Image (cartoon, rainbow over all chains, first blue to last red; front, top):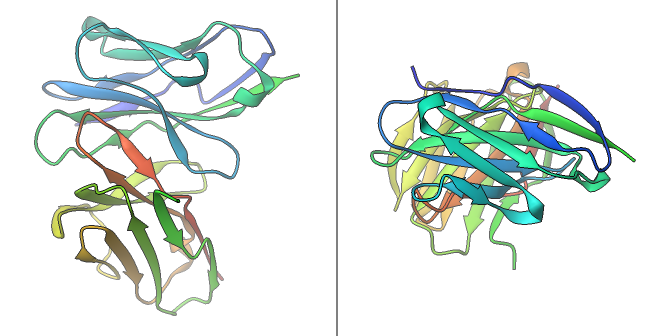
Length: 114
Length: 112
């Protein structure tokens, strides 16, 4: 069955700490991978995406993610978090053909302490 | 200019009522979606339309009926509302599989 797992449900960090959020997927075939962020009370916004090429992708606001095909992982990283990064982070995967249905992970709630 | 707009933003209604949520996108995208986000923030796809044609119809009660009068609009009608329908409903659109979604700001539905 297609699924996306985000093992860290809640993460609390101090400002300037480094961040890594895990994402593993189970999906047959070639995939596209995404990270979305949802700030409190707001809609989801695209942080970054991977569909081919360099497995290390850079997104907005200093975020990056690395696609490791052998591990079925697409972990999100940021070297130094800020209080404004407090949000819910969602990993998502979709196939490269067919109906392009996205499967979202259950989300990771990040709280950054000032 | 809001790219994907949903109305209303908040909706409080009693059990058994019928309600509609409207979604419009001005991005020229061919594909639109409805997602439900529950109280635990879990996002689950409900429907997707591509150029007015239904292409994804997940296991959703028949009380939920999407309608797409044109490719810029995807509305969601819900009959006989139940307490369990309380959630945030997000509309989204997409230019294609490589581009990701553009989400609307969500409609918080509360059934009392």
